[in-house]
Length: 163
Image 1 (cartoon, helix red, strand yellow):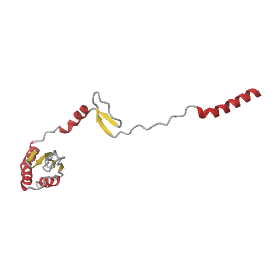
Image 2 (cartoon, one colour; image 1 turned 90 degrees about the vertical axis):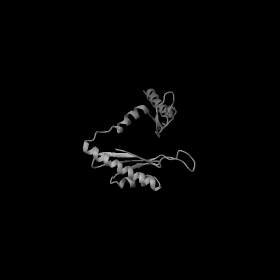
Image 3 (tube, helix red, strand yellow; image 1 turned 45 degrees about the vertical axis):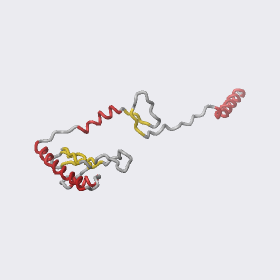
């Protein structure tokens, strides 16, 4: 019995001593953090840190915002009556020679009685010269009394307004 107890104790001591020699748990490296969404392209491997997405599918889903609803006759009349006054106000801005920027377009549209005007632009210059052409200022305004929108764009060439 002594021999077996000595054998067990020595085996146990050897196991403890050799535990440092066994395979250690490898240090795990964290997964790369996604920093951008990248469109899936056939034959091209995406760089590390990209979240892949199907661009065609995303664009098809994104088209829903373009769906328009039909307005009843009274609402359509209210909105169509606003288009000439908004167009005139914006063309007056162009003719005045003032800078056509988001603030001036918003002010010109608000003069017609519309509120909640949203603007975008002007965009990045298309040329890197002193006479660089810029994208027009786009705008949109919700018509509270009619439930629709008036939108369009303004550039030095004039205004384009749609109901």
